[in-house]
Image (cartoon, rainbow, N blue to C red):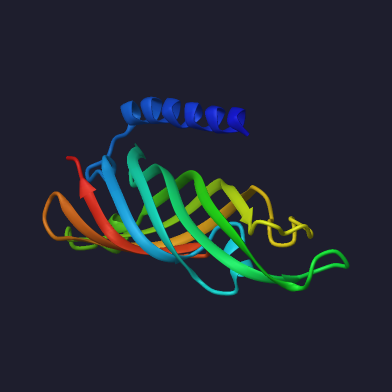
Amino acid sequence: MKKLITITLTLLLISVVCFEASAQSAETYGKTLNLGLGVGGYGGYYKYAGRSLPVFHINYEFDVAKDFTLAPFASLYTYSNEYYWGNNNNPDRYYTYRETVMPIGVKGTYYFDDILDANSKWDFYLAGSLGFALVRARWDEGYLGDRKYFNKGNGVFLDLHIGTEYHFNSRIGGFLDLSSGISTIGIAVHGR
C-alpha cells in the first residue's frame, strides 16, 4: 500500500509540474485551493453506515488546458456501527465497529463559462474524480467474530460532479459541488 501511495503522489507531482507549464487560457481557474464540508462517501463506504456522513474535503486546482484543470485531493470521514455477536464462550452483546476513510485522488474539471457566456462572477463546471480510499478499521476490545463483517477494504472509485462557484472578489469564492460521491459546499482561495 505504501508503494501505491508513493507512486500516486509522485505521478501527481510530475503532472503538476508538466501541465502547469503548458496551461494557456484567457481566464484561468488553476492555482486555487478549495476547502469544503459536505456529505456522502466514496467507494460506497457511507452506504454501509446506513446514512450520509459529514466529510472534510480539500483540493488544489492547476490549469492543464483552456477551461480544464486537474486537482489532487484528499477527503476525510469516519463512522461507527454496532454489531450484535456472541458464541458459546462469549455472551451475546453489542460490539462497536469504527472506520476512518481517507479518499485521495485527482479531479479533472471542465469549465463551461465561455459556452454559457457566464458573468465573470460565476464559474460553471462538470468534473470527474478518480482515486482510492484508505481505510482504517477497529473493533471493540474482546470482539472475536468476523472482523470483515463491515470492512470493505481499500477501494478504487470514480465519481461525477456538477458545480458552480461565485467569486466574492478576485481572491475568494464560494462553491457548491454536487456529486455521485461527496457533495460539498465551501470556500475557494485563488492564488492569481
